[in-house]
Image (spheres, rainbow, N blue to C red):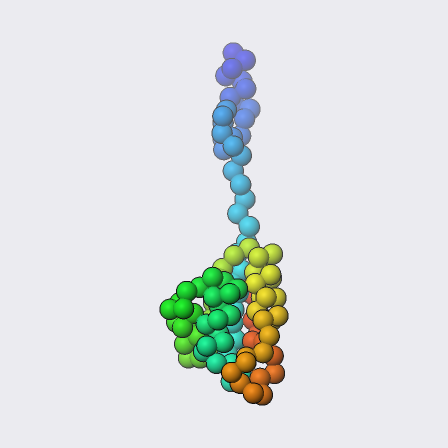
Length: 112
């Protein structure tokens, strides 16, 4: 009788020997915004260093930013997205453009 009662009292998701269900954290996109002050070479190098994207993926994203005005670089947790956005902002000027004003612009937004 005690065994039956204890089974009925436990929540359905947490039966004996099972771990409690984890709540998934909300996800966020890291967006890169287009401008006319950075070269494809700069974007590819930045994406490789910050995100670990190979050259081919970096080129695809650079083309997407140029064509669409923005590109999603990564979808992750809020804290990680904020870190990656800040790393983009801190990457520095494009050495291939004389009048480059600084790093590219990035932002984060909730995943739909």
